Length: 374
Ligand code: NI
Image 1 (tube, rainbow, N blue to C red):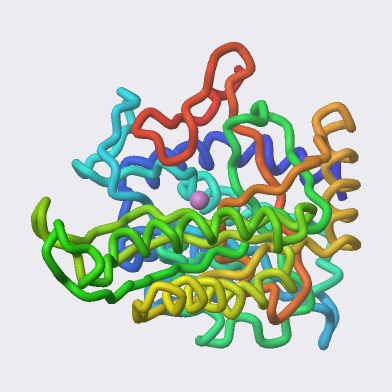
Image 2: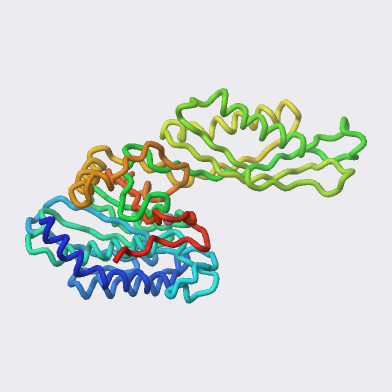
């Protein structure tokens, strides 16, 4: 089957480049992918696939059935939203919409999903199982996967596969990761409540700014002493506000942060551990607090057996010199993990970097994928 797949892929390539450029020049923000979804549905219907629209708000689902009844069902998930970034690539097919850009390569992912569906609908040999193609909205806001799952896209699914482009891997290569690929990412909102007073008479007040600084310092130090150093935890307070005047002791400080971890047991224990430290520091200094710990997405844990299948397939198709085994996970987050609560799966990194010059990172206004070698 591989030689026929390569033959069809070569024939489809010009059309897929056209599709990707169309998607790139018409980016839409998370949850607003109406034109993108309609375009995807049009391409899929023209290949004779059964298409369902408005799944998970603006998502699209298509199925390609194999020869046998009641066979296994394999899902391929791609995401299709863009970012609120003003494109500065200067490409001929750059974004038509000011302030919106496909700067995370979801245009490429969508094209890969469409290309896979187009290709498999053309192979002569009947497929040994059923395929479901998921085109997910709102990955950037970590909402889309939950919307899709709520609408039943994981019903009957035995395994699920996905990919993300990666500029530090050269174009034409893939990165394979066994186990944890991305981190669990949660949000933290913490308010420290003290008692206001004169800046010259600290003993008559409860200084929320000083206590907030103690909370931050204690949390950062406690990570190094209480958390297993082989199971990383990153806690970043990215926003802090409080106080009104130089000579008035602040009665209230609010801070917002993100909490990242890789190991599911660590992730599960973090909210209670953080609260224990916050409560301890506040109690010591007579302050009150309000802590709102919101679960974001869990860590993507790649299934070992399915990852092995991707690795062997990539080696067979492209040669082992173009398959990298990734030794380190990322502390970035990816809502593909939501699907993995329902079936095992794996996500790989698709190299899109230029080998001969520096590459802009994902989410950069000049992010570009490698130009095709002619
Ligand atoms: Ni992305």
